Amino acid sequence: MTQAVLKLSDVGYHWPGRSAFALHVADLTVSKGETVLLLGESGSGKSTLLSLICGTILPDQGSVSVAGTNVTTLSGAARDKLRAEQIGVIFQQFNLLPFGTVSDNIMLPLRFAPERRKRAGDAATEVENLCTALGLPRSVIHAKANALSVGQQQRVAVARALIGQPPLIIADEPTSALDANSQAAFLDLLFTQTAAHDTSLLMVSHDPRLGERFDRVIRMEDIAVIERAGE
Ligand code: ADP
Ligand code: MG
Image 1 (cartoon, helix red, strand yellow):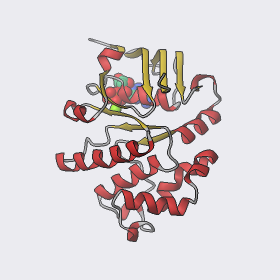
Image 2 (cartoon, protein in one colour):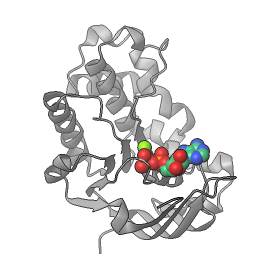
Image 3 (cartoon, helix red, strand yellow):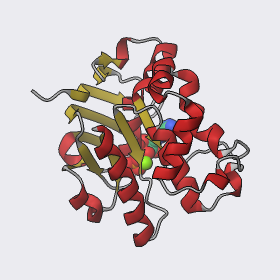
């Protein structure tokens, strides 16, 4: 039996004070090592779903299990810790600390996750290894993030998600600002790293052309009942 890294059951959510949008997901499972592309048009609730998975918001009903732990039963602090330990997150805008160095940015998740820090071994060495693997020159490791090119910032965002080998990587439209060549290069980096460590990947996009590279492609409208006012 393949192990589920992520499992949502009967999850319902609406944003507080907003009746215009509601989401219900009966079942979403991601297995260990599986790469899944989640497609859906703008406003269909993709980012909301990722926030539910990351435990930054809690569902009105249902359960969200990450690495075997039901996020919905945990306190806020415990959810933060679970996220830091188990999930590498790549945001659309990369969300780097602009005045932090590349090294500060990559090490950031380890600060809140002692087990992940242990898995990373010597963190400075691990930062160097990741930078080498991702084609970031050593000369930038101590540069400020805001001094980097967009392509380099992307690599830092990937390195930050990968450090300490979390079992699940979540990426929210990380390629939407990139041209086709940079998109392909970004996915090459991500897939090489996830394959090497049997990491699961759930990536969100509105671009179906990315689908062929993933084990499985799912669509918001197939996994979720989405209520939107006026539709
Ligand atoms: P997608 O990522 O697919 O574009 P979102 O999850 O961002 O979709 O948005 C789904 C719906 O939830 C939209 O109606 C959006 O306005 C609403 N929404 C998203 N984030 C928030 C928030 N922080 N507060 C209130 N409503 C939100
Ligand atoms: Mg979104």
